Amino acid sequence: MFDAHLVQEFQSLGTPFYYYDLSVLQQTIDAVSTYGLSRGYHVHYALKANNNDRILKLMRNAGFGADCVSGEEIVKAVESGFSPGTIAFAGVGKSDEEIRTGLANDIFSFNCESLQEISVLNDMASGMNKKVRIALRINPNVKANTHKYITTGLDENKFGILAADLPELLDNLDRYAHLKVTGIHFHIGSQIEDQQSFRDLCEKVNSLQPLFEQRGITLQHINVGGGLGIDYAEPDEHSVPDFERYFGLFSQHLELRKGQELHFELGRSLIGQCGSLISRILFVKEGINTRFAIIDAGMTELIRPALYQARHRVDALTSSKPPKIYHVVGPICESSDTFRTDIPLPEVDRGDLVAIRSCGAYGQVMSSDYNLRKRAEARYSDEFMPDSHS
Image (cartoon, rainbow, N blue to C red; front, side, top):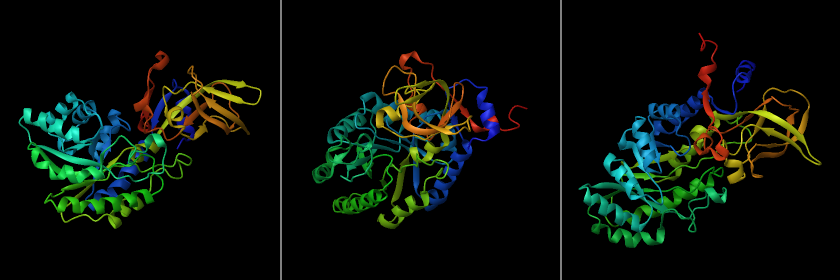
């Protein structure tokens, strides 16, 4: 991913910065098209993973819709050229202003997460004289086998309508004259590597469909969310997730009705592996039992290690010396500003460059100006092509 020419170009740039390999992104998009879109499946790109303008343009041009979790994401998606008719809006706490934004743009679907939200949305749609398409986000109580902070489909999570509450809700739908239930929605978590979780989700969806059919409700679409994980340990060997297996699992195990659409909301699996955070060694500090490589990127540029104990691969780009063991840490005045501990790296010194890998998702988009740090810029692989400076 980082050849000698590219590293040489990096050395003349200020750090830290986000680097996006657009060839990896295109390979990923092509795989989704081959194994997902070709089956007639609909993919909504999750803006929460990365809302970089160039990324959004590529996702839109690929034929993806948008998955939004705030009113501002809806606005951003529309401004970026996504058709409102392809925008799904989820979120457990939609404000009145955000609901109005969705209503004004006549989006594809509100993914409703509580009985009270349904009532409020109906009242607001009535006030605007609109009939609104909704999907019921159902909490399937399916274990995602991932970090507790990114598990979303268990009974104790805040997301979705409990399956036990569905019969009463469906029996009283006629009171919501300004809503039309067009689908059901699920999202069980993020960074899911155990595909049995997705098979369990299929079985849950299959068991719920008769509840709607018994009441004469036609579900036009099933939205199974996203959550497919990426390989943080070996990003070069697995730069593109196994979409053939992923989409194939739903094709094999989900019992769609005739004419029923299947929708996905993918974020990390689309954008995660194409991004890296490029940083420079500021100091090497020898402790009693620890050797610190202090870099100029911090939790302000990549908060995942501090927030989720995420383990991103760190590559030394400008050293080929024998390895030593390092704690790779940032400059922020927080002990949690640590990227990796006790990892082997070729011996580094002040000025050497490192790449923190798999940062395309939840890197730039979650950055902050804590400590009044300047926001890191984004750079793209096509800037460094041999003829790009001519």
